[in-house]
Structures are given as C-alpha cells and as structure tokens.
Image 1 (cartoon, one colour):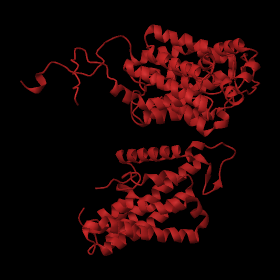
Image 2 (cartoon, rainbow over the protein chains, first blue to last red; image 1 turned 90 degrees about the horizontal axis):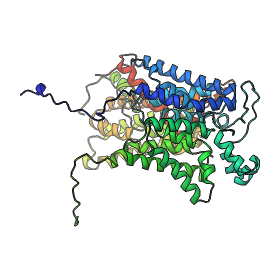
Image 3 (spheres, chains in turn yellow, orange; image 1 turned 30 degrees about the vertical axis):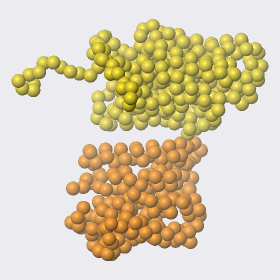
Image 4 (cartoon, rainbow over the protein chains, first blue to last red; image 1 turned 45 degrees about the vertical axis):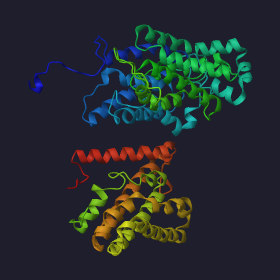
Length: 330
Length: 207
C-alpha cells in the first residue's frame, strides 16, 4: 500500500466542529464591549467618541496597509483589528492628542501582530503592547486624566488623578474623603463616574459584557475568576480594601477582555487558573510596590510570556491514557 | 574556511552586506543597542570597531604562521586587547566628551564576538592583504549598521540628529532612546533588510 492510499487523516486538535468562526467570535467580543463603549461616551463626552473612532480607524487602516505590503489577503472584515482598536481606545485618556492613538495602533497592529505572523501568532496582546509603547513614550499625556463630564457636548476638560493614583500618593483616607464616604466611592467606581482610561472606569458596563461572553461560552470563568480572586485575596491579606482594588483601574477590563485573549493566553484549564493568579499577583505587586499606580497592563503582558510554558507544563490528561506510576526509589 | 578566493572589493562588500555583523550574523548586538541612542555615539563606536577590526586582522594575519594553534584564542585576545587599548586611549585623548559618555563600551570591544570571530575564521587562515580588506569590510558593515540604527533612534526618540534638534514642538517617541527602543530598532531594521533581500530589491545578495 503506498503512502497516499491511507485514508485516515490525522490532524491536530481541535476536532470539534461548530458554526463559530474567528470572525464571529471577534464581532461578538466587540459587541460585548459596547456597554463600556457607551459608558465611556456617557461619562467623557464627544471627546471619548473621537478618540475611540480614530483608534479603531487607525487599527483597521494599518491592518489593511500591512497586509497589502506583505502581500497577504486583506482580512479587515474579520473584526480582529476593530477589536484591537476598541481595546486600545479603552486604554487611553479622553483628552489625548490624536497622534498618540495612531502611533499606538501602528505598534499594536503592524509590529505586535503582523511582524509576528498575523492573527493567531502574536505572543503579546496587541492592544496592550500598543498602550505600553505610548505610555512609555508620552508618559505625561498618557496620565493626564480627565474628570467625567457626563455631557455629550462639553469640551471643557478638567484633569483629575485616577482613584488608584490618589490612593497610592495620598492614601485611601484622602480618597474616601474626596468622594464623601466609602459607599459613595464604591458606587462611583462601580458605575464609572471616576477619572481614568475611557473604557475601564465603569465596572458595571464591563461586567455586563463579561457575563455575556461567559454565558455564550466565548470565554470560560477560569482566568477572570482566578485573576480577580487573587487581586481580592492579596488586597485583603495586605490590609488593603479588596472592594476598592476590584473596582478601581483596569482590572475588570483586563480580566474579562484582555487576559482571556485566545491567542496570547494559555488554553488548558489548569494553566488558565495559574495564568489568572499570576496576573493578579503581579497587578497587586505593581499597584502596591511599583512605580506605576496601575499594574494590570504590565501584569498581563508579563504573563503572556509564560502562556506557552504554562500550556506545556500543564497539559490536560489524554483521554484513556494510563498514568505511569512514579518509581519510589528514583 | 580555507584561504579566501574573493577579491578585495568582494571582501568589503561581503562585510557590509552578505555577512553584516548586526543585520546578518546577528552578533555583537549588545553595542548596537547600548550605544545607539544618539547618532554621534553610534558613528564613533562604529569607527572604533572599524579601526580595531582592521588592525587585529592585519596583526593576526602577520602572526598566523607562528601562533601555536593550541593557544591561539589567548593570543588573539592579547592582540585584540592591545588594539582596543590603542583605540581607548586615542579616544580618551582626542574625543574627550564622547569618550566620557561611552568609555566603558570602547573597552568592551575586547569582548565583541565579531572581532574574535574574524580573527579565528579569516585572518588566521589568510594573507595580510585579504585579511586587511576583510577587516575593513566587516568594520564598515558594523559602522553602517550602527549609523542606521542610531540615525533612526535619535531622530524618532529625541527628535534630533547629531545633537541638533529638529522637532518643531512635536513630542518625540521617548521609548526609542530607551533600551526597549533599541530592540525595536534592531529587530525592525533586520526584518526590513531581510525583506528587501527576499524581494530581490536593492540590498545585493551574495553568492
């Protein structure tokens, strides 16, 4: 029997067939981000809309241009560039010069994604690398936050420090005092009426999207729960305020939408739990001891490096495999 | 590699393009990141390496028949460190301000893989003239690479060239003069030159 007569096709997993496609998932995740998108416009006005539209347009434009230049089929309709643009836009302050989102998009799409081989081959989350790049390049513009204006038309930007920044520089007491009580602080953080990056301030809007993704099965609970759980645990153990650390900053956005990226996160369940816990630990380490007030971005990027290693080290048991007994006297 | 069959001109081109230290062989990458945050530093580093590489190749080629092959590496190192000391002292005497900002890196030329590699692979097996041209070629290749890298890093990261500011109020990309930016610059330029070569573009292919 010659080689090509074999009819048994052996291919790599996954073998499960479904109607889901990359395209569909990307658009669904983008849809899940819509509540936070709406919240950002509600709180930061027209400026938020402009920044985010520019970011999305730049990401899609660079995706098309890069694919054209390297001679690959242009796949801007698959939604992945739109999603990267949305996530990158969520990570920017509202009153930012527009060349910053454009540069961030170039780094995210062309360098982080396409120079590594395109969708599915990038090691790091493109939106986060884009954000890290512009944060390091323009630290001042990237950390000049705007107070929520709650008005579509208003262009008057009042700059204000983020709650995490106040907590780090002046202490929790000052922060609680500024918001007029702990419950007021919590509710402002929960609904998003605080200064910060566009898409991260409203925990409620992100939770809505996150729950949608969980219910529809686009993400599993492992990474978000272990990520958020670890943050709460570390906050409690170190004598901080767990509720504050859960609601403040980009934790919710990172845990539900960025750490759960299929490409840059691990894929076995056990590895996902470790990945989430690692993200949580690093986030708290940076928040409590680091030079930056917020650590979600760097935490996820650092754990991205470990994703392949975690997957290798924690392979799920092959179905039907016999576990070899370890020899007692090694 | 036995005695070379390349002409002198081919040897120089080989060093600049086909076996470019940074972009093709990817050795001695440390200085390509450490001293390339400004064009001036990058160029002077390249000149120092060009000098050391050429002189080392000449010296080794002259001595090649008297070096016992069992102790050749220590002998190479002695020769290299001798010429590096010359470059170091020369710069300390005639280019003080630059020397102050990169003094350590001049001394570190001793440890460059590219210089030892050419001594071992080329100069110890070839006559003086081809060895000299090989040294010039490899040195020029390094100089060109460092010039290109530091040109882009200073332009994008500081908005200046050779210390002269060119920005009209535009805030430069600070990250490019940090070590991170060095990795970005080297990686992107390396990819660019490989891509040009694959397309059969301007960068001449060897063989």
